[in-house]
Length: 403
Image 1 (cartoon, rainbow, N blue to C red):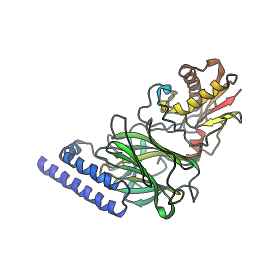
Image 2 (cartoon, rainbow, N blue to C red):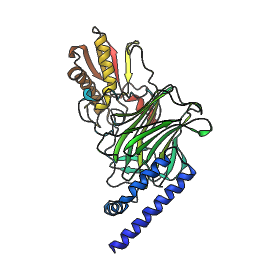
Image 3 (cartoon, rainbow, N blue to C red):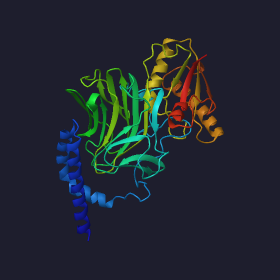
Image 4 (cartoon, rainbow, N blue to C red):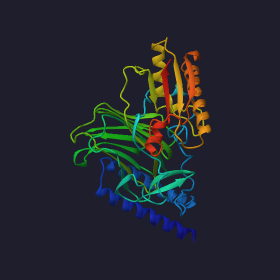
């Protein structure tokens, strides 16, 4: 009986790979040949993978996922935080990790407004089969076919902004060679650039004839990752967790400026994405506090906690450098939340988080503590409507105000 089950699973796996390869002929990407080489090498491990799959928990009928993901990466106090490895000293993060999220949120989706098992309303299907799933209280967009393409329904048409950022959480179980692709499309929907993970344990990035491959330094390519892209005019950088994976100073422009961002999920292990945030900005400032106040979305916290995440390092480095260069300046640090949760809890959390930011700047970046005052406003000073996800994302912020 066990041998029969294993034979059935092996046939299903073989059929899935066949469908995946047929699909790749229809919408072949620039890294497809690389993926085939990786899959050929991985084929030697098919029997073991099949046995392992028989022992794993299966998906439930109500759209939940067993044994996947992690706790929800957002709550009433701050931006999504479901990033891998959020512990450690902020100041110890490599200076190569310089991602700062944009401040004008144009799109945010955590799939909480969609029905489980359905295709999300704010996305466009371009191939494959997707559904909203749930894991440990968090919603995900899961690809249930061997290959699939989706696009965000952005509020504006035409070329993407000159300065923009994209970030999201990704979860995948091995084997997942080249399971995740993010591609920017230009005229005629031709590929202007594409980032693919994992290709031989690395993130591969290609634009025109330029191709780079940076090995991932984390524990493994499987599991939960936070993926980020940052565009500055013709320059694009890609990041995974706290590592910068690509740094291209000039994107090939044969197909014009990108106007579409497309996600491809290509694996038989049902990879997923969530907490997708696309924002305009941030334009590199000549003077961070020229107008007397800096509003930032780059200071992050663990869910329901006032502990500053290490991914906040780029913004805090900028603040500390500014204070070093302007020794007479003192700042008030103010925390803000959206309106999710009890108002009293939001107010308390925002105050504690502002105090935590001041402590990190003092203890890790050696800024004298008496240069800071802290406060929290909870959800009382919204800058956008809390009725939409984009508005709530903009209300979760930290402000630095000159005293």
